[in-house]
Every structure is written in C-alpha cells, then in structure tokens.
Amino acid sequence: MQASDEELMVLVSVGDAEALEVLYNRYALAVMGLIMRIVEDRGEAEELVQESFWRVWSRSDGFNPQKGTFTNWLFTISRNLALDKRRRQTVRPQAARNETEALQMELSYDSSVNVPDSAWSAIRHRQVRQAMTSLPLEQYEVIALAYFEGLTRREIAQQTNTPLGTVHTRARLALSKLRQLLDVAREEEV
Image (cartoon, helix red, strand yellow):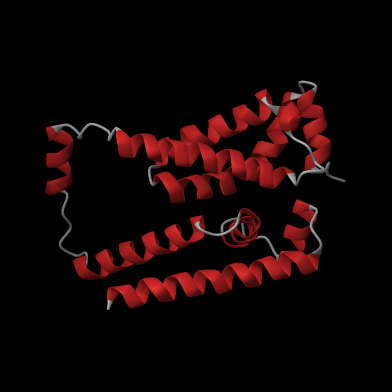
C-alpha cells in the first residue's frame, strides 16, 4: 500500500528526504504542466518546479491537512511562484538573445511547414493554456491529472483523497468553463 500525501508530509516535516522524493515523483509532471502554462519557458519552468519542491521541504510545517489537500497546497505554491516570475518578466523583460542565436533561428526556416496552420495551432494552444490558468485550483488539478498524467477519475479520486463524485463534478465544471472561455476567445477572433 502506498502512503498518502498527508502521511508523506508528516515524514517530510521530520526531514525524510525519501518521502519528498515520492511526492516529487507523483506530482512533478503535473506541476511542470501548470508552470509551463504560465511562464511558457521550459528552462524557467524546470527551475520553478525545483523551487516548488524546495518550498514543500523547507516550509513543510505550513501544510495543514485540515485546510485542504496536499495537491491544492503544492499547486498553490507552484502557481504563485510562476505568477511571480511572470510578473517580474513583464516588469523587467529578459535581454534579447544574441545575434548568432537569432540568425540561426532565421536560417532554420523549414519550407515544408505550413505557416498559417502552425500559427493557428500556436494561437489555439495559447488560448487553451490561458483558459486552464483561469480555472479554480481544484478543477485545474483534476484536468491536469487526467489529461497530462493520464489518470482515470477513479485514480484521481484515490490520489487526491477526494470522493469520486466530487472528481466527476470538478471535471464537468472545468470542461464546461473551458468550453465557455474558448467559445468567447473564438468569438473575439471573428
């Protein structure tokens, strides 16, 4: 039998690094997905995943299972770090890449790529990412675990210690809200 998130956090709070590793292995991909949608840079996202789990380790005494699930706490930490990073980048944009890198990117043009289709796909991808970040954390968690980790709703219920009916409701509400947000985005394009 696997230890629950809450049991692992008790171990983390007394300095058990193996417990943290188990939590990392369980949630690093979902955290990466959440952060990537916000910062849109893989290198930055990888650093923020590490920072998220460092905060779980260093602030383990701040986790209170009576206030919510571990995943809600972890995703809140991760989302706040990513939003802070994005705000800092907006205020202080990163320096432009060097000329050699820019030239290499220009020269790597692939004529077999359908540019309008690629552009449309990128726009849609960005719209979905943006819509996902506007979901309530509990709904985001269900969608991320289902679509990015491939878990069934029953597995999500077990992993998050949430009743199956609640998982179904959160998924339904999240998909409905995403559909609504994407319909609005589609109407704005016209």
